Length: 131
Image (tube, rainbow, N blue to C red; front, side):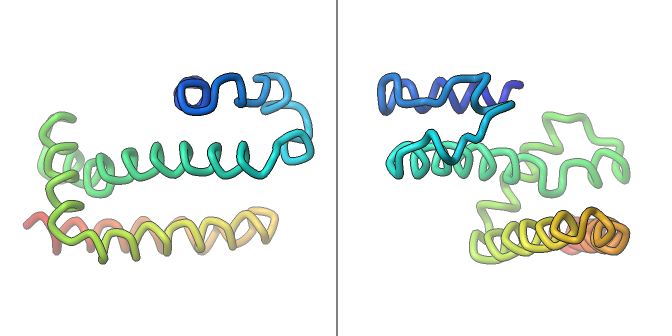
């Protein structure tokens, strides 16, 4: 819900009333009702939010589990790790997107393999980047 509200605010502030209706976004055929400019703006707003979430959480959960760190420390460390090596983090984020897309494209059957694989890789990334 917060994602929709933040996206709406970003789009409304950038394009005026160009954001799609909330009901259309949830239950309608969104792609039919959007112009190319609206679609690109919507994707850009989603990409910005995804980049922020990724940057704050890339090693946060493993750090909280392993080191018992509080959320603020874990998110600060995650942001520092992301800013230290942006090309590697962009590659890692793209790999996550591709693997999750494959998992969804296979009617979630692929997630049986993808989820443990990403979890294991995230743990190793945390150990290599933070310790």
